[in-house]
Image 1: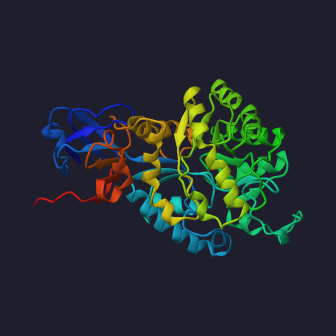
Image 2: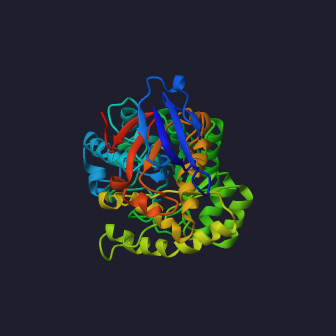
Image 3: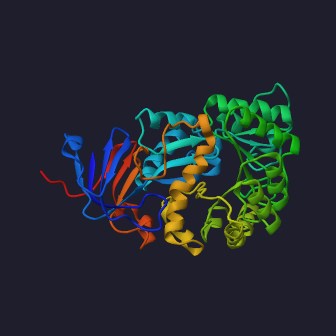
Length: 422
């Protein structure tokens, strides 16, 4: 396939290229040239006339929950897993149609969905799955009902554990076992919750959950298997404990302080933070603890981004949409909202090549072989043809139905609304 007459955003540069032509063979970008692709190389190829539009890498969401976008919390825990997987499959198709060709799934039973997508049974993005979230009793991700406590050895697993959504791990040995299980099932990274969280009913934000020994156990499993641990954490004490234990990525971090940012910079730890939108708290009932926690976290977003920039933290973009199909439709708009803190080129780079660098921490546990997040020779052909210049007008990504005229993943076109010529 040849894209003729396109301006390339390569995933790294602050500006577009001059008029270029791009040859895709199989699932790879074979050649990028400012001159015509040689006839022998393009023989038999499908030609796409870019008409001066922008060719850019597919977008990457570094914090996604494929299984938890559409159901309510109650549905996620009580519905049949087959039904919620079908629900997630429909959302996966919409995710790809929004231009997100890759997601890092940070908790939920997404292994079957990933396999169906990879096998071509379902249309959706590449998934880097974590599998079940590792939590502790009363930690973020502990969605057990009160009648499911106490937990007694030998008794059946709680519903959330049966589903593979979360696993309660209350000792280093339990952490080791459950982390190994998730890697066995296909996890590309290990996700645990080092502090309290917003959506969990028994998990105050200020609580530190895992002990240093438990965190170290997870890090050791990841290290032995050539991957890494990413930790949900909002507060400085929880973030610092995780970093000192060897965790390589902090999820959220909205309440961090300057010493914590400095520590992360010194250790080279990633910050995977989300530009939570105004109104996000409304997915939770009025007057609920969850809504109050959401408001507390959202107030810290500005300060967290300021610290990330001051200390040059390796920063990833994600959306972390939960229990809200309406908010999921704003996935591209959330990316565009990064321009409150970054230039459009910086925001687009974050959601392409920078996020791809984070994915690469999975090493040999990566489910996909090849370079993501860039338009360069030899990279995987995950590409968007944009009707306009997203660096000049990043709001184009907020309306993918209109502005993403071609969507390609792994060398295959899933959308093409360009005029077809006989």
